[in-house]
Amino acid sequence: MENKDTFVKKLRSSGLRPTRQRIEICKALYDRKKTFHFTISDLAKILKSKSNEKISLATIYNTVSAFKNRNYLKEISINSNKSYFDTNVSNHHHFFNESTDELIDLKNEDVGNIKLKKKIPGKKIKSVEVLIKIQNNN
Amino acid sequence: MENKDTFVKKLRSSGLRPTRQRIEICKALYDRKKTFHFTISDLAKILKSKSNEKISLATIYNTVSAFKNRNYLKEISINSNKSYFDTNVSNHHHFFNESTDELIDLKNEDVGNIKLKKKIPGKKIKSVEVLIKIQNNN
DNA sequence: AACCTACTTTATAATGATTCTAAAGTAGTG
DNA sequence: CACTACTTTAGAATCATTATAAAGTAGGTT
Ligand SMILES: [Mn+2]
Ligand SMILES: [Mn+2]
Ligand SMILES: [Zn+2]
Ligand SMILES: [Zn+2]
Image 1: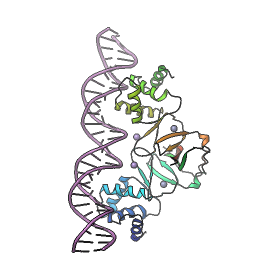
Image 2: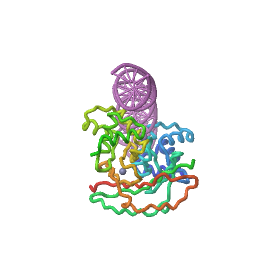
Image 3: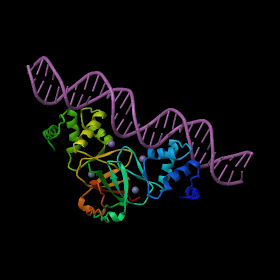
Image 4: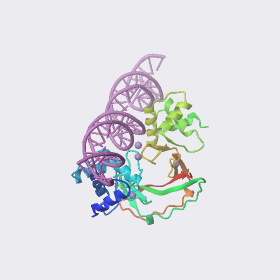
C-alpha cells in the first residue's frame, strides 16, 4: 500500500502539481503488487468504479500522456485499435494473448539474450523487444 | 515485371474476382523487387499517382483487408496512429526508424534464434517477433 | 447476345479513439 | 488574501477506420 505522500513527491519532482485527479490516477496505476497493462478505457472504468471523484476523460488522456513523457508509463503497440500502456517502463518482452487481448510481461531471462548481427550505420538502437502472440488452445 | 495473369490467377484462386481495382492494387503491391511496407494512405497516394483509374478509399480498405485475411498481406503494429502492412507475410523481424517512420525487414539470421524458456500451459504460440526501434544519430 | 445474380465498388455517413479549445477551477507563492 | 501559472473539464474537432446502401460488374446460364 503506497502512501499518498509518495505520489505527491513523485509528481512534484517532475514538475506536475499533485492534484486530486493525478493522485487518484497514481493510486489506480501504481498501488499494485504487479505491473499493470491497460488501455485508456480500462483506466477510465477503474477510476469510475474505485474512486469517488469523477475524473474527466480529457484529464485521463492528459495525465497518461504526461506520465508517458516523464517515463512513468510506457506505450505498447499491439494492434491498431487502441493503445496499451504499461507501468513497467523497463525494456522487456511480452506475451499477447489474442484470445483475451491480455498483455503479459516476460522476464528477460525467459527470452535468451538477443544478438543482433546487423550493423546500421548512422543509427542508434533505442530498444529491442520481443512480442510473442499466443492463443488459447481451442 | 509480374504479369497481369499472375494476379488474376492469384485472385481467382482465393475466391476474389479479378476486378480492375484489385489488379491495380496487386500491381502497386507485388510488382516490386523488394518487400514493401506501407500504410493505407501511402498506398492511396501511390495508386493516385501511378494508376489511371480512380480507386475509392473504401475499396483500398476493403482490398487490403481481404488480402490480409487471405494472408497476402500482414499487418504490423508499430504505434497507435496508423496501421502498417507488409507484403512479406513470413514471420520476420523489423527495424523501425523512429526518425523517418520507416520499417525495414531484418533477415532471420540477423537476429539469433530466440529461445523461449517459459511454458504457457493451455496456450499455443502464434508468432515470435522482434521489433528494434532505431533513430538517426543527430 | 441477353439475362441473372452474387460479388464489388463507391459516395457518404457513422463510429470511435484521440486531440483541441476555451472557459472555469485550483495549487503554490508572496 | 491575491495573483498567476497550471489544471481540469465539457464539448467540439479531427482522423483513421468501418458501415450503409445504391449503382456497377463478373461470370455463369439460357
Ligand atoms: Mn486494424
Ligand atoms: Mn498514441
Ligand atoms: Zn509489460
Ligand atoms: Zn517486413
